[in-house]
Length: 271
Ligand SMILES: Nc1ncnc2c1ncn2[C@@H]1O[C@H](COP(=O)(O)OP(=O)(O)O)[C@@H](O)[C@H]1O
Ligand SMILES: [Mg+2]
Image 1 (tube, protein in one colour):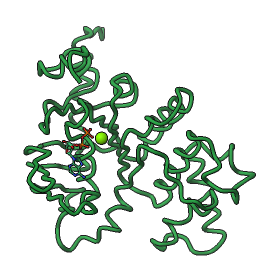
Image 2 (cartoon, rainbow, N blue to C red):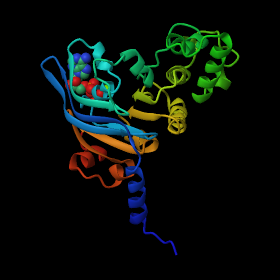
Image 3 (cartoon, rainbow, N blue to C red):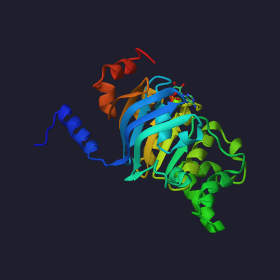
């Protein structure tokens, strides 16, 4: 006798998700570009081995929040971040933090595939070399094969590892960028609209990959596609005008969100 109503099953799943530990905690995160405030006291936590999707209308602060998670905003002169963000228990804005090391732990994949104008092999070995994770040819060969395997690209490129990464198709280039991120054994992978420059078939491949990567990595993905958020994520956070409107189980967000603004956005009423 184990008959649970659909609602009860959903609740149980929610509770299960609610027991997943936080990998990153964002507390009262605000971001300013000069005088302009782009984020308002955002409290958003990222669960381990979970795909968290950031959605919301253009300009609402999704990329800005994503970039706070590996201090990518440090590269923008006018940008100032307040609040606190932790990775495991460490404050990533603590002055003692080595930002290069942080970005190895929290990797990033950008909107437009951006392989280096070098060989496929060198694209993957670049990170492990500078971080001293692999030195000998055997170690480098190993990291190239395993990273390309994880990115679902090995079979397509194994016979042309020494050809240029920029000669690949758009979808392959993006998977190469994922291989490059994975090569330094990150714990968290940030993706900012990783499929927006890809065709539907390449998009489907990357989505499938995100699904697989979740087993070993914590993933935060910005997407303007609600279908994509629904397909790839377990948690969804909705932003509007620099505020976090709601963060919830993805199924709940798309069926029965708590906030009217989420409802409106999902119904296509704005954005
Ligand atoms: N480098 C920047 N300099 C100044 N303003 C910026 C910069 N990047 C983003 N902004 C502003 O911050 C707000 C949030 O932008 P962004 O995080 O890119 O939104 P989204 O990714 O949701 O489209 C927008 O008003 C945008 O114009
Ligand atoms: Mg953006």
